[in-house]
Length: 205
Ligand code: MD3
Ligand code: FE
Image (cartoon, rainbow, N blue to C red; front, side, top):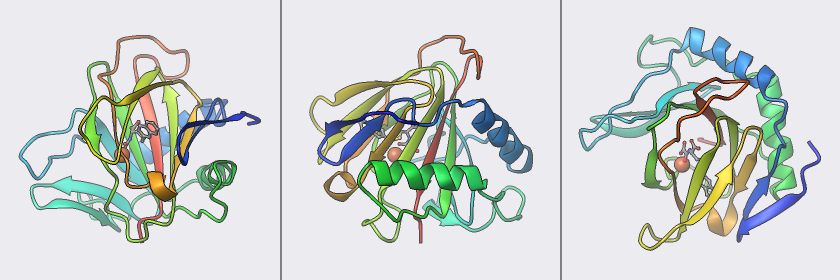
């Protein structure tokens, strides 16, 4: 909770251990996933993502052959996305403040689940209406290598290892930054077993 903020690029802040302990977060993820199961989304290009996803909160990120967008209900069930736990909202707000972005009120929480071998290619989070809001990312379980490309997806990325409980906040000039996650290495974590979760809090609308 009292992590010393580390600047890993301009307006990209890493808060080591800020979300620890993560067991309660994992229990909350399991509640969300019981209502809106993890699924492997299709991309407009015809691929299937190796990361499994679900959402909680008023808006959820979705991808299919028609494109990327935020939806108010789960396309699998037609039901609204599960509510965002108050503890998630508070964590995102506090982390954003610590990262230099006071007043962040997320209305979307994308939950990513990685198994060993899963990865996320270079992309930017660009489906949100107001790019003045930051994005807050919470890492849970197995460690991963975050890749930060910056303004273009070309060139060698900056590589940062993130571990259970680490939080990354990026906004302002970094909001348009390209990023990704290296293929997850096998492992066994006391809280998640052979998994990594990532919560990504956004202001979608
Ligand atoms: C900041 N998720 O869902 S968080 C996404 O771990 C997404 O699941 C990733 O990108 C995940 O859209 C990563 C974003 C991120 C990635 C790499 C970084 C932030 C970073 C590298 C350096 C600094
Ligand atoms: Fe992203």
